[in-house]
Length: 346
Length: 281
Image (cartoon, rainbow over all chains, first blue to last red; front, side, top):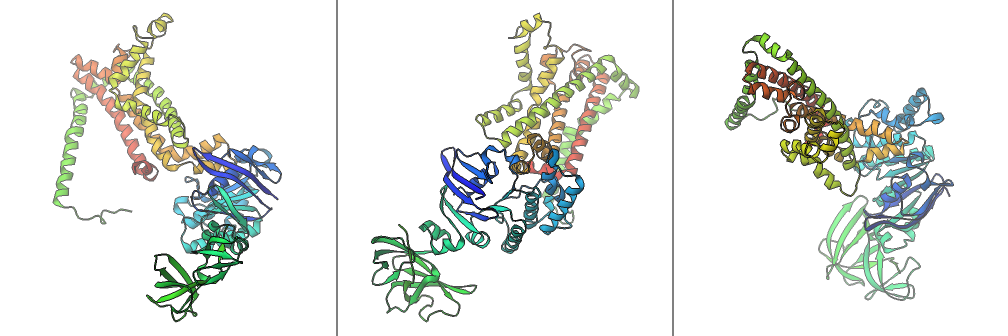
């Protein structure tokens, strides 16, 4: 393991931002810290960068006690949420900053600095913009300058704080692809913070889901989808429906119908069943299931999404492939809802 | 870019308001300024020059420049340090410090002069001890400098604080992760980001330092050729019915102010973007 974080806690005033966080990552891994705002993910990133000192715990990186190393000597490349480009410096000066700041024998001759800046401009595809000031760049361009600046010092680890937070959808997708390519080319251990589950799942080798200063679960995107550890993870990783049930003999029993349980968890007794919109079916009114009214039908890319409301006001979402909409699903029609597969959490 | 053509046509009401504003400024600011110069030159250029060349006037000019030369750099350093503390760090007593920086704006300059007399005057707390050791603060140059500094303390800090608060600490954090030390971060990131606002604050502070009257009167004792600054010298000459002399020296003072204004205007015009940050609040 290259990065080992153990039992980190950090308190701001009376609120605990991190509450005993432990994780580890092998060299070259692309790790996402996913969580809602206030979950502690940015604080954890800043602890790794040395911008916050934790109250307890340890951070080891490639055998070094990271907390004992000054932030300026950690050689960690950090990309800030709002880029934090030096506003009075041109693009090339921004990128060269870390190289200029090196002292003694580590300092490169100015010719080499120039070459490396040029190479980095190529890597992030910003050739020709080296003499621009940050204020003259678009959000996506600033983002890439920030990335090049962080990569210039050949960081031992790359940290990104909501790297695509302030960009529009198209630029975001473009940059995501570039970031993955750059990660493949440089092979640097990368940790990035996001609140967007799609982004985390799309980019990362593994995702750590944070909630209230704790790690709820850490695993590959596939693990998280197939075996979510908690209702929080299940809900955070996609749209979710829920319905009270009784567990008996490995099945979730509802009012006159039942569904198989996808995960191992669950002792016999009362529980809440969680299920995805795409694992929910609608049938005609005379079939079995929960009686609902279809309140909206929306086309969403390759799927049709129906919104249904039970008589007591609970709302459910159902997704169908565009071609496979059953007859009974029409606006304002009554139908029977059944989950096809549910998750229950202890 | 805004262009004249792009602006909506002016209504008669707007025109009337503009005329009133321009007329008012002409009456209240421009007329006295013209009076100063015309009175100064009332008995010919030669008479005005003689008044300025007078050793007492020269001594007053020297005093004024020396006071400014000491008060302004010290204020710039203190203002920068205070703004840096307030904007980049959280600490106990921050609100307290902010209020104290503003205090000289809120007090009468006479009070700002009087406190030094109470501290260092012949009957003051430390006066007898200092006098015993041959150190003169009141009715001497140190008193002038102290009084001026107290009055001008807020100018630089007040210019810098809002700008630095708006800029936040992310750029400094970025510099640190890139391997820069504290000094390097300060000189390559923090200082360049505020340099125009700093210069602007220094100019305002300088204008006030050279023109200060109230606080300085109290500590100066108005000893001709010794502890008079330009504003005090003007007062002395005027009280002696030497109108040409008074206005000649006043025009010298007004010229210093005009130079400051020109530099300030050029700065505002040239670096509008850099200074805009603090105007938005």
